Image 1 (cartoon, rainbow, N blue to C red):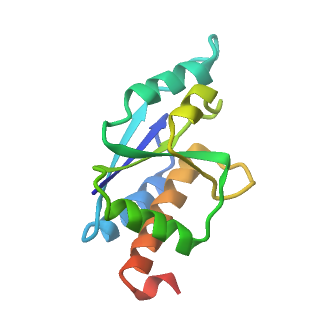
Image 2: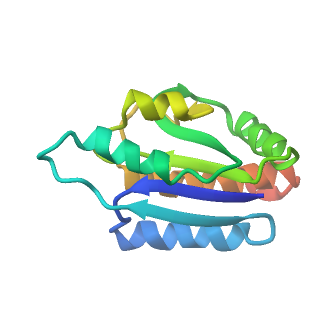
Length: 151
């Protein structure tokens, strides 16, 4: 199984890039994480709709789609690990985690996604969510493989 982070805008802060890379390296024995970040739209048009359409066009066929959404489900780490394990053991090709831009996402994108996931009712930058997501995926694989990291 593969994992893809699909989002809007680049990760600009060095500490976040380094953190994401650290967890990707730790995950190497279990799964590979690819990243695809699309260009942010200017504020002249409705960026959320335009960016959402671009995200939809870049969702790989055969992937389980998870939208990072403040109004999504907030699982425990164990529940998140179970979701990952169940998808890993299914016939899907991978999981795509979709992270919208600073203007949010459209209802059209919300309706296309299989699952909506929230890490908190607080608002975080889309760049920070990428780091949190990488860490939680590593935590999930630690739980799945009974590794000490989780505790």
